[in-house]
Length: 335
Ligand code: CUA
Image 1: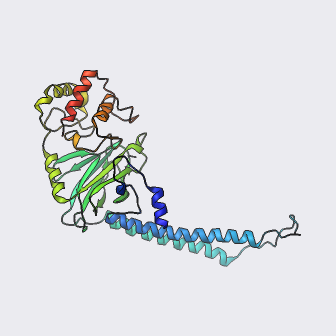
Image 2: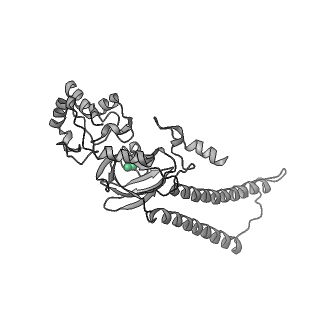
């Protein structure tokens, strides 16, 4: 009952995401998130007892020592000063509670951050940027953005092991149903891991304030059966598709300064500041989860990124109508 009420309250509906993959820490679908939920329940139970005891004593005192008819408002009740027993109790009990909470938290954190990866582990490097996620698969030599494809792990044996770092400021990885929160800190590598039990799209958020577009730094984990996952890897490893139809469009794109910030493998676009666009159209969203990846949104985004995501580092290129059409057609060819 309690968990249902809190769940309903915490449910964040994200456009285009099936309802059962909403961000909800009370419906964990991976080992780290499940152990975090256990810790959360323990903390809630302890704090609930403290709340009931303190609020109960206040209510008891208000009723027991209220002014009765005929008593003067000026007449003070008998005052009691000092009690060694009570003072000792309210010093020692909170200290014990704090130690229990520290112990439980330390155990959960150690289990998540020091877990030695099982044999079939997939390694993923996640680099936080203002305001998007760079996703690297070092064993497959490929780079993508904002979506982490991983194999589903129904028996917990196909875990994905994540190395987290940042290119600029501190960000925080948080996928409420899988694991969290773990900071992405410049010049440091943190670790966490996930083993999604069910296939689906899991939505998460940057959980450390990192500038104006912090709230628009969404991350998706797409958990797939192993064969589908491997098929995705094979597709992503290919260089950008050469569409003969897109020849002119590609020439226009290559003449613009887009190429100094974005990488499109196999072309002259070799920038590293922005997301890799090699297989842009295979992704579900644009701008780190801000817009569903449709033709209209792509056009609006390229035309002026400051409209949907004010303050982001992609400038409006002030393209002419024909240029914009060409750039959008070229990007659309990047399947
Ligand atoms: Cu990145 Cu907040």
